Amino acid sequence: MTIPVCDLCDAHEAEFISGNAKQLRLLPDVYKSYGGKMSFHGQAHTLRCPEDNSRVREAVAQPGAGKVLVVDGGGMTRRALVGGNLAVTAAKNGWAGILVHGAVRDIAELRAASLGIKALALCPLRTDKRGLGDAGIPIMISGHLVQPGDWVHADEDGVLISSVALH
Image (cartoon, rainbow, N blue to C red; front, side, top):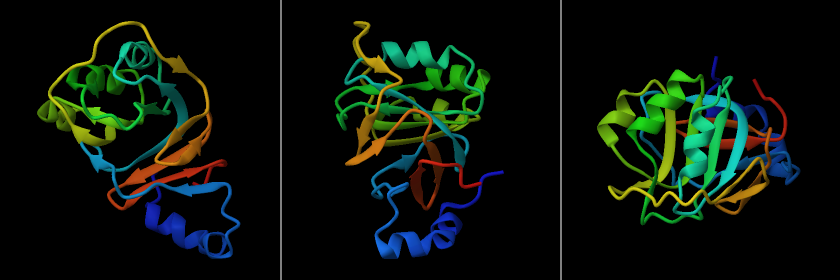
């Protein structure tokens, strides 16, 4: 069960007020929901792959085990890192969601996928496939560090990253 992000923030309000929320990172409200599920949570599997979704394709082809794929596309929105085919594959392989610091495409197919998807924007152009990118490394998303194994909690109200499970 996914606990609403607002409820998680309320439960940890003292940490945010005191400035001791080092284990909690609330991402800015720049990510839009594009997937068939509006809320999702799971441990982060991180990727860095600006304008090349080869590593995204490799990741979603593997069992997701309820994890969230966190893709650092450098905030670039000139090419889509996730499209309908990858979303369907991710859903079939048990991924809970995908968070893209970049663009996605194929909106109708993304909405039909049984998967949570958040991204900065839509772009109809696909990426080049050059086999570039790194998996399982610390990445920066909207100025916040995301480590492999961190917890991602996302819904219509926002995205919260935590170093420990909050549910």
